[in-house]
Length: 322
Image (cartoon, rainbow, N blue to C red; front, side, top):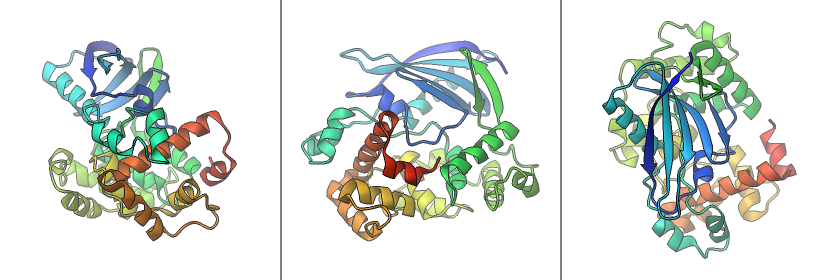
């Protein structure tokens, strides 16, 4: 499907703002639904059942940080639809996040201080909906990054839509319910293994409106976590990712996967990943960052992956195994 430019919107961001560190996360596995180069991100977006193309450009000046959003579709879009889409982009990428208190508290901290100065204005964020994030989270379970990438690409090519805009061809996620008539056997044929059942159950759950992402955003962390853990295929690790990336809880930190345990051990204790620090000790260590512990670790984590873009880190490559 070839799309045309429908609307260009200017969106302000709170200060300070780092466009590239916000709109490109080197730790996110590569997929065919986005493309980034310094100052620009091309992204597909399935919003209210419509599969859109987005070109998001850094539009910051010295006194006014922000972005320019070009929205592409194959027919005109209602003004309220465009406004809701832009509001959702603002939410997903935390463009209105106030980082002043976080920066003030930790600007001189031994590990975090230099990283804040390097990436000042970086926001956590994820381009997808709750539904999309859960699907990706399931694909990440008990698999190497390479296999997760292959499974996601197979799903996109089978059930997503290839759209062309601004001279880019990118895959767009399918809407919830698209898999309603797809059998588990069809999904297993894509080499998803046991994840086929989980993905089928999640699609049915969302298609039947048994969960409302926007309503859940207004609930407490305890309620959010409880509702997420009710979903088939969502365990503590996936719920933890969701609470941070989708629901923007900066203080919640109760789970560390074995893979992350090895990386954290090297980062914070310079411990050989083969002999990692106990997860309980790591969680206790992160308490020093208080109400911002998730955000603080995000900064340190992202700094590592940005370094990987420019230099070879043998111990990290051994753990990634792409």
